[in-house]
Amino acid sequence: MNPATILVVDDEPDLEQLVMQRFRRQVKSGQLKFHFAADGEQALSLLESEPDVDLVLSDINMPRMDGLTLLDCLKEVDRQLRTVIVSAYGDMRNIRTAMNRGAFDFVTKPIEFEDLEATIEKTLNDLHTFREMQKLRDSAERAKINLSRYFSPDLARELSENASFLGLGGEWREVSFVFTDLTDFTPLIENLEPSVVVPLLNEYLSGMTQIAFRHGGTIDKIVGDAVHAIFGAPLDQPEHAENAVACALSMDAFSEQYRQEKAAEGIALGVTRIGVHSGSAIVGNFGGELLFDYTAHGDAINTAARLEDLNKRLGTRICVSTDVVERVAQFKGRPVGWVALRGKSQKIKVFEPLDAQRAGDPAHRMYLDAYQQLEAGDPSACQAFAALLAHDRDDPLATFHLKRLLAGEVDANIALP
Image (cartoon, rainbow, N blue to C red; front, side):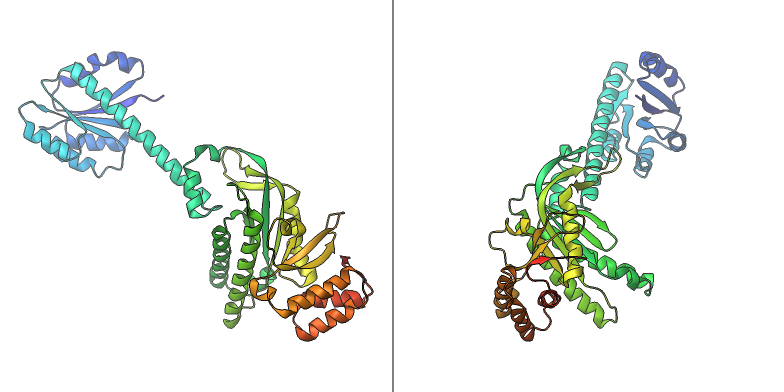
């Protein structure tokens, strides 16, 4: 532990010897270290070369620069230190002035060294407490800045006050994942100037992350133009699947509106594909000692990523798993079919969530009727999907199933290449 460093500023020639004699034990043991200056100007010069000074013990009456002027100058020194003023007992006016200018305490002349020792100890203890509090505040501020990458501002503020949360480690939790990807963004940016690309992507990602935060999501990662969000961690969210679906629908609405706005500016932005899945994962801080990285590990994450990619095959923009649908009390959407996702041997049932307007459209009922025939292997399913496309020619999922049926597939078990 470094010694506390004291700068004594006084023009009395014998004071240095007296101080070193009085505090010889503390100096020898490494508790205290002293520097000496004859006036304020010399003190300021010494402070420039000695950055570790903790306490300035200064007389008031000195040549060239007195103690009161030195106090004013110390306000400009960007340092955490304390000042104790030394003055004659009858000079209370100057002592009051010194306290008003920032002196922490004072001792009177002639100096009683027991009083001086007690004052130094009290001042250094106060400085130590102040510095520890400053470290805690700085640590909390750094934590808030770090956490704001992952969590909404309110949650980041709450978590930054819980030091135990920042520890390493993780836990198994039931959570939901939302994975997004902006199609064809890489080839697009090759034809755009950086002055266009940077604000374009920043505005898009800002909108997507703010939507995740509003729905209680935690940002796991932002990889290029892709956003990975977790729902249900670090705080419990019994409705994590419902929040994830609502978030996906809001992201879809935002990204479609943003795409139309950019198209009006002559920028052909691709659609955003979204995958949502619920399941068990290990979540926590996996960043090591030097990096905070709140993330998740487990097969559920891979499934969400595969569902996002599945949209490419189906022509849809959002795919959610049956594990999500089973957790949402009043899920609005339509079944896609049974799919063995890439890298998976077991099939899962996939759904496309719908907003309230699309769920209330007559085309939704027509789709459900056609899908019921498809799932039952009823040959009339082909005619039912054709009728749906006559009603809504822009339905990509109906188009997908009609092409499957015309190619010889007969039920809701979807074969992927």
